[in-house]
Image (cartoon, rainbow, N blue to C red):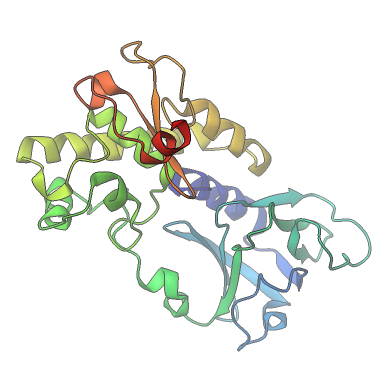
Length: 287
């Protein structure tokens, strides 16, 4: 799933490509992709793009008619820029293409989604907070006013484990499965540690890991074309998706805990005092 750093890079890329140019066609191809109908998506056609924004994991293309074309790429969605779109109209079907947006000069982008779980979402709204997912977002962890005291306030009384708390978009905007693993590894904290149990020193360590991990990921992605962002994300991850490999910090073997629809990776030496975390799903499979 694209997370804050990749969506930030896509925002910068689209700012360069779209601002000042006219969108002449917005064509939903997959029935599931469009989540709003008033105004109709055709109302964005003829708009000149004035800005591109990021809200957590949401991309927001703003036009000069007061409308916002907002996209959430979900787990398996992606944006593909084309200097020249194919001629003719795409055919609805079982392929990955979900939506096509065309500019007046023939360039544009496709939104695609792999797999069978169609969660990629597009909204056309007058105010961006009309998008339910945007309206419930917590603070952006890279915002100038997001300091250690604000993180401490968010975690006060938070009875969930750190892994789940960091992924909650209503608590923090933009952190997902991959970067929560990376942040907790950098902070040397167990993903199962209760958020409310952090000492002031641990909160400071978590804050530093949060800001540093995301800032470095944004910097690695900055200036890359949309098609290169996935590879850059994967190459920059230290523990996520690397179960069975040596930890780059200490050399211990990176372990995994599996859930019904996701998994987390961590280093026992760096994060859990050398003790492997219980993986109930794998335990059942091994019986």
